[in-house]
Image (cartoon, rainbow, N blue to C red; front, side, top):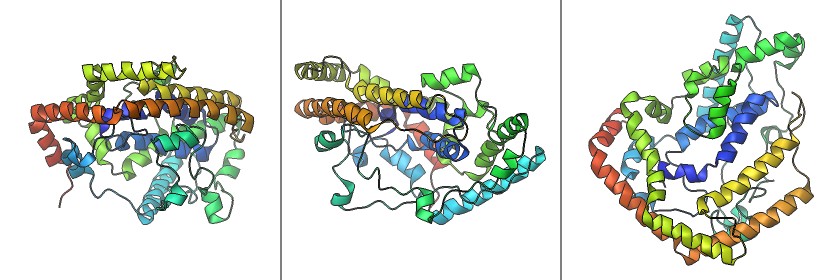
Length: 369
């Protein structure tokens, strides 16, 4: 599934939660992880598969597949690639921070850790986006297969994370620490910018001062997806591709399908859900709010708190109830097949209308053989 479906999969609640966590700085290490997640979303949405089975056409048969395959084929990075990128990034940060009047030791503990996925069905559990998965995990909001098995970097290395700049930062006054963090990662968004981020609409991340860290990322991350998104030659084209999702929701076949799904859910005693695309999103937003409230008064070095097991169990019971009814109704109505048919119809019409510009996009950003 292509970009048109990212809107249904990346819930506004999750995006809002990540943005708030990034700029409220619970700790430096989490900031880096969240920043990387947000930065990656822009690139990844072009090739994301659906996080449920709501709409899942065969990628190989999708009209847009040849164009984006030509751009993103061969973009996988190895652990060695990530390590070099991180080292280069840290060197640039150190150089930038010195120019700002601060000391900074390159942090060799951070960066991306590549973990190999387990291929066996026993290890991976039921397939995401299926009724079998829903019966055990709901939508995977509170718990999912392997959630507690993924090692953290400190566990993987057998040692606790060490920030080489912690002693220096703690030697600074409160106002100097504030200036240090602003130099490192920017002052954070204004109220107006934060409102745009929370609304989940278009936001020009380049308009945000992201400090030495942001500048280093721009220098070290060769990201054709971001280059393509920022190219004014293709701004309208990329926006039209994103709009395919909205066009799909306006199709009469999808409107009828959503109505039939809501009627089926009501028969299961769940009349609060009128749109399948919002069922999972509303639960995700509710869970995000619970977590945010729990950590609302966290200080800089406070541990990130999780809801109690009783709260998790109570929430997941309802999550599973909704998800099971959701997937049961969807299977009865052949949701995937109808969505796939509409998707391909609209996407083929789009390709026919915009072939010249799509070819120009591939000519400019396609991988050279």
